[in-house]
Image (cartoon, rainbow over the protein chains, first blue to last red):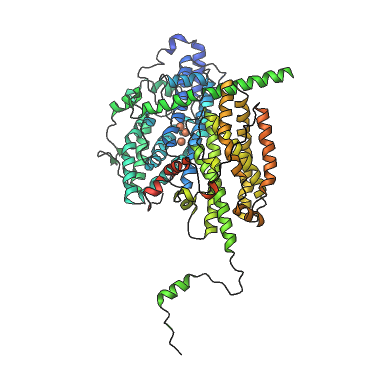
Amino acid sequence: MYTTELSKSASGANVQGIEDPAKLAAFEARVAADEFIEPKDWMPEAYRRTLTRQISQHAHSEIVGMLPEGNWISRAPSLRRKAILLAKVQDEAGHGLYLYSAAETLGTSRREMIEALHSGKAKYSTIFNYPTLTWADIGAIGWLVDGAAIMNQVPLQRTSYGPYARAMVRVCKEESFHQRQGYEICMAMMAGTPDQQRMMQDAFNRWWWPSLMMFGPTDDNSPNTAQSMRWRIKRDTNDELRQKFVDITAPQADAIGLTVPDPDLKWNEAKGGYDFGAVDWEEFYAVVKGEGPVAKERMKARRDAWEKGAWVREAAAAYAEKQARKAQAA
Amino acid sequence: MPSLPPIRPEDEAVAEKIRPGGAFDAPVDEAHGRILFELALRLGDDSLILGQRLAEWCGHAPGVEVDLSLANMALDLIGQATHFLTIAAEAEGKGRSADDLAFRRDVLDFKNCLLVEQPNGDFAQTMARQFLFSAWQKRLFDGLTACADDRIAAVAAKAVKEVAYHEELAAEWVIRLGDGTEESRARMIDGLDWMWRFIPELFETDEVMTDAAARGLVPDLASIRIGYDARVRAVLAEAGLEAPADQRPILGGRRGHHSEHLGHLLAVMQYLPRTYPDAVW
Ligand SMILES: [Fe+2]
Ligand SMILES: [Fe+2]
Ligand SMILES: [Fe+2]
């Protein structure tokens, strides 16, 4: 997931004026018929731009998302938990790779995308700008963050752009394991000592609202949703997904003795779902702007890794070049 | 006839717990158990500490592909550690688990070699360490597939494939960095120089290893050394590097006398189980 539409202006609004009407009509018909669009196919510029932004944002989120959990690999409390967490974070790196590859098929290089991230031009999910304070946070992230990701990504397996849809199929297989391991940590914590229960409820309190924010602004504040749904880039609205998430997650919290930190949460028989309180959108937009609690740490960690790794990448390129020259001479 | 002391219920309870065994059972070979424990501990600690070190890179490696390969090796090593420490715990027979051994021992009781606890340094230092260790571990595990202890043999048989890959990957990086740019070459020279003094410890034959070899538990380390030296020479030659001059060997890890680095690593790794001794995670 991690692909919240973050631009507040409607970007695809004037497509009609600039594209060849016949091509556009043919494209729209294919999309409406649920056909996949492939890299060599004609596509409107706005479609290409929206997808490049969305997929690269998703890739960045996978990579930045390694940091909050990576923070606990060295301190995982048992051999089994350490192995599971390592495997999970390794999966996220893999997701980043598939997604960068999928985005590259639209004509932007990985290098350009990474530079956009480091310059602050490209966004990544707001969720990763919150700190992981205790081991319970690792449970909360797996359960809530990967849970929200699944909710968003399952429909993306049928998104209109072929390479993105196929990347999502691979990603989704792994995400359900991520969520299970997270919930399992939460169960163990809530079945544990008072210290563990305190850590768990505290983590849940801190991650609940940011998780709801992962689905993005409310529908009446998402100017691009209509176009994205029309192009089958998106298949559900932000509010629909958020509601679904609350409906599934609240009973899971209850089952292990956690209290949802929302006094307004109440089952609504008539709508067959929960009513819940308002998300603090001011905080959401502040985090989008880069003002999240550990946004500076996250960006610094990524830039440092990239800059400190420059000599390695240069050496690998120099070596490859020498080998190629040798092969040519031979 | 003097009256005998009565058999009290608490004595009966103790007697109840003693496992059945007749007078003609083979005596439990205590020495064998002790050697097996020591050996499994060394193998487990080597893998655990190196896995812990490699995992420190997670999210900070020079590129996503490298990040993946480091995490992958760390995962293999943590898996090996789990198997070996489980065997050690059973051999010890004091009711400790693999997790107890990993998270509730202090420095003096860790038996890993000094090489694996060395700091990551830069990527060249990490790869120098990895190559020098994996090239040894690969040859050791080859021999351990014939270990007299079936469980160790089985773990080695599975792990030797993983380790062969670690050795290959690290060798490629030693070559690539050695024969890359001026900077990468200088860094690889420094990395090898840092690690070089810990090689002799890998081949140290103390009482435990001598005894273990006599019991068919470990291969002859001297014969492994021949292949190891040849491999290291070949990779350095391909990298266009000279082997560092021999340095005075630093030993002690196998007896629990470590570098200053290990205490810090353990402080981080063990913090949760130590802070919350009653918690189950
Ligand atoms: Fe994702
Ligand atoms: Fe992911
Ligand atoms: Fe995930």
